[in-house]
Image (cartoon, rainbow, N blue to C red):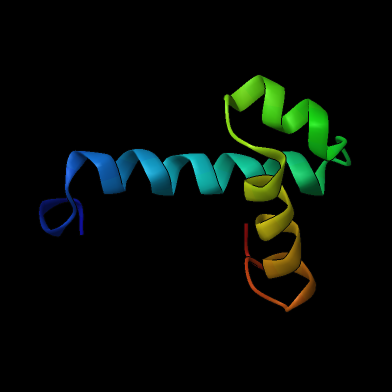
Length: 58
């Protein structure tokens, strides 16, 4: 799969996975955003994905 993604897409996927892992650990949205250098809205989007049942195996 790595061969079909651009370097930017790989970075974005990595960030999304980190967001999900930190959300599952219970960190506040603002703290995750600060640690990863993303917006709170990006973290909130990840939280919404978890509530929708995605990322169950992460």
